[in-house]
Amino acid sequence: DEYYGISRWGGDFFGISESGEVTVKLSTPERKTEEVSLYEIAQKVVQGGLSFPVLLRFRDILRAKIHELNNAFLSAIKESGYRGTYRGVFPIKVNQQQQVIEDIVEIGRPFHYGLEAGSKAELFIALSHLRDKESLLVCNGYKDREFIDLALYGTKLGHKVVLVIERLSEIRTIIERSRALGILPFLGIRVKLSSTTPGKWSESSGDQSIFGLTSHQVVSAVKILKEEGMLDRLVLLHYHLGSQIPDIRHIRSAVKEAARYYAALYKEGATMGHLDIGGGLAVDYDGSQTNFHSSRNYTLKEYATDVVEEVMEILDPEGIPHPTLVSESGRFVVAYSSVLLFNVLDSSSLTVAPDRLSVPEECSPTLKELIDIYNSISVKNVQEAFHDIIYYRDLIRSQFIMGDIPLWERGLAELYFWNGIEKLVKVSKQLKYIPEEIEEAEASLAHIYYGNFSVFQSLPDAWAIDQLFPIVPIHRLNEQPEVPAIIADTTCDSDGKIDTFIDIYDTRPYLLLHPLKDEEYIIGIFLVGAYQETLGDLHNLFGDTHIVNVALDDDGEIVFVNEVEGDTVEDILSYVEYIPKAILHRLKRKVEQALKEKKIGLPEKKAIMEAFEEGMRGYTYFE
Ligand code: PLP
Image (tube, rainbow, N blue to C red; front, side):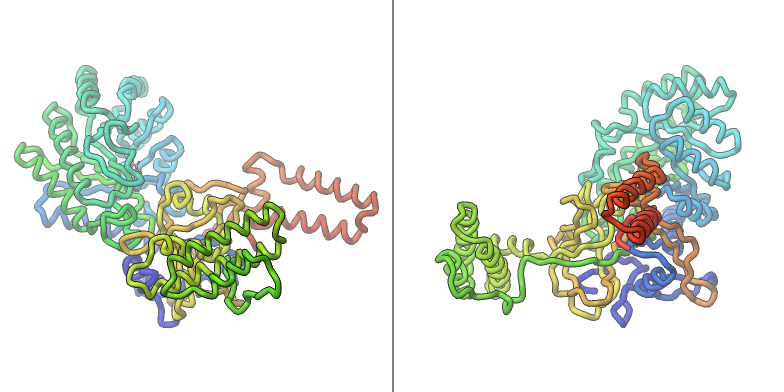
């Protein structure tokens, strides 16, 4: 655990069993909790006929997070004497999968937990799934006439649909549609705050952000609403600073600024009643509890308390009633509930075991020199040997290009070079100060573990914005991991790899893993429930992975509640507009031609066609 840090980032959910397997805490329908081995779950998944990669979903974790969030705000409200309540909404964009939304709506019902929609498709999901009329349905994003009509009809059906004005021009369309349909809207205004936050997700805030109204536009919006007699329909103020805000200071300053906007709108005569602080509540991916971009330097309790107190501090002196607090946390709610499991297909390394380094009877003086340097490496000559070994490796490369040395010599020289670097790294650990260049060289010694998954499909943020996720083998944790490795995926893209890993307070360029044995080696990527499933793409035509919802039954046995099979080759080909049947037909014609030309016989024709047909129905990953 010390190395993988599960107790730091695993929350109350993940741990390690005595037998060295990662565990997840699940509960029976009677709420008896048990620690269940992920390795056991993985074996059951395979026995049930599915192959890796598989995404595991845990409804129990989703429930715990929804309760945690709502209870944190309700407690902060109670403890501070705040005279308002909390109504969270889940932003559908963070995980749109039907099962997830259904679970969220059901679990959130006692809290009147609502949904946030940012597009027409998301609005359809929200309108059809929300049952509780007390819950809010917040509509963000740019809205055309159709979007506005849908939202207005939602209001007519009794839902609290709030149309949040993101652009000044939307107001006129909303007023026009409201009059045409005879339905009064609930309106919100999204403001661009001057408070910003640094980090990978910061572009949602600040003057240059593409969302929301500037202070001047807010004044114009109020003027229009007043003129049209609609200011009483303005019930909500919204802002969103960006996702994953690691520093509580930025959260506090944004709430403060927003509360001032709220007060100003209230004083202008708007009905108001809701202050929506958007998302941004961060997940501590590395468990460091710092303001590092993959962490957060605050607890949920602190977050909720600070929001409540900042609002009171601004509104109380003005005598303004406390609004219902709304937040749109997505990442915090769903990140923990999904784990991606994949198997390792193979590994490769630049070095060999030292006893496998052959000594040639005769070779060029350059190679001889390189071998001598390798043999001479000691604590006393680390830096000098490092420079020399690079010099001679480069010399051999140019001599090979000039045609002066044969391929086998170059091959052997590369082995001596990398083994030499490995020896230097090892020896330098005894020095008081390790030379920087040698420390840097260590990363290039990492082995490559080839994982059966696609970074682009399952971890798009790891590729697009270098987001960090905890990555841990789910078994063999009683064995010391000793192989420094990076992970390559099955796409043939040089970006299809993970070579930055979480470390406490920092990142590291490799992950220590176990040497491969005959049994399958299974690695889990944790905290992947937010954004990853929906941002994923079909690079190299690797499709959706299998999804298994895992729970416990009355007897504490593992059950798979809802299995969703991943894409087949056939599915994927039709997504990109091929007709699988037509492809098989083309292949059949080729096979028949080969038969005609006597390149194959009848039994081969049958075998080839069967392989094509079966392949079409198969999983897009290695089976
Ligand atoms: N609300 C809005 C308007 C967003 O754009 C987002 C995502 O960035 C969220 C809420 C969810 O944010 P988070 O996942 O950080 O809670």
